[in-house]
Every structure is written in C-alpha cells, then in structure tokens.
Image: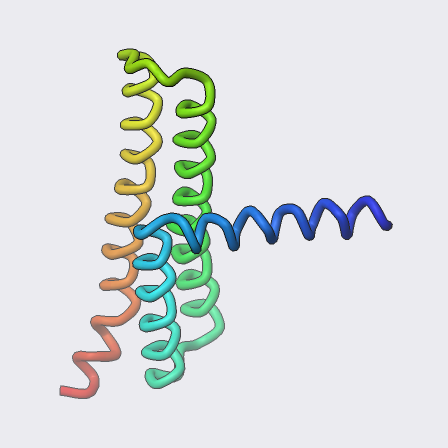
Amino acid sequence: MKRFFRSAALAWTGIVTAVKSERHMKIHLAAAAIVIVLAVLFRFEAIEWLLLIILIALVIGSELINTAIENAVDLASSEQHPLAKNAKDIAAGAVLFFAFTAVIGGCILFIPHILYLL
C-alpha cells in the first residue's frame, strides 16, 4: 500500500508540474471549470455528467501525455530531427483532435439546455 501512495504522489506531482509549466493545460482547466459551472446551473442529468467528465478527461489526459512526449523528445536530443518534430506534432495533433471532439460533444450536451431557456 505504501508503494501505491508513493506512486500516486509522484503522479500528482506530474499533474501539478504540467499545470504550472504548460499554458494550454491552464486553458483546458479553465474551460473545464466553466463547463462544470454551466452543467451545475443547467442541472445536468447523470448521463450528461458522465459524458462531460469523459470529454474533460480525454482533453486533459491527452494534454498530459503530449507534455510527457515533448519533454521526453527534448531530453533525448538537443538537435532538431524530423522524427522528433513528427513525434511532437503528432502528440499535439492528438490533443487538438480530442479538444475539437470535446467542443462538438459539449455542443451536443449544452445546446438543448440553451434552447430550452430561449
């Protein structure tokens, strides 16, 4: 159990490091906070909460993985290399893909609530 808590603490340190060092992580967290507040105001149903949490997790999780890949590539070589560029660009592309998907999913979740108000 001690090893589990140590691993969890190290993982938490990684999340905090990414939040402190990555501008996009701050943007994703701010967006997540906004949609969570809106979901509370719109009184989301359980299934809507589930989908919203999954979308948030995909975006933030992919940003964490992207940050790890960028750091590992930078550590592996200080020289510019086409494969290093590809790795970083593809990882960033994954974040962009999940972010766009989350926006579409967010629209599907929120538009009916907004239309109901109108």
